[in-house]
Length: 86
Image (cartoon, rainbow, N blue to C red; front, side, top):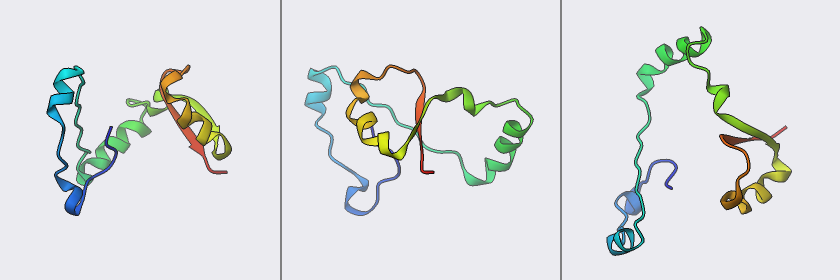
C-alpha cells in the first residue's frame, strides 16, 4: 500500500511485476479528490448524506499505535482505526 504522493526520485518506483504475477498480488491505485470539490463533499457530510464515521472501526490512543501496527495482519475490527493524539 502506498499512502500519499511520491516525489523526486521515488515518483516512478520500479515494480517487480514477476513477483506480482507469481504471487497473484493485487495492485490498487487511488488518487484523491481535487481540492475545489471539498466544499460540495463537506456539505454532504454536514447534511448527513455522507457519514464518514461509519468507516471507523476502532479509536485508540497514541500509546496503542505501535501494537496496532504490529497486529495489522490480525485485525479484529472491520473499518479503519483512528489514533487520537490527546
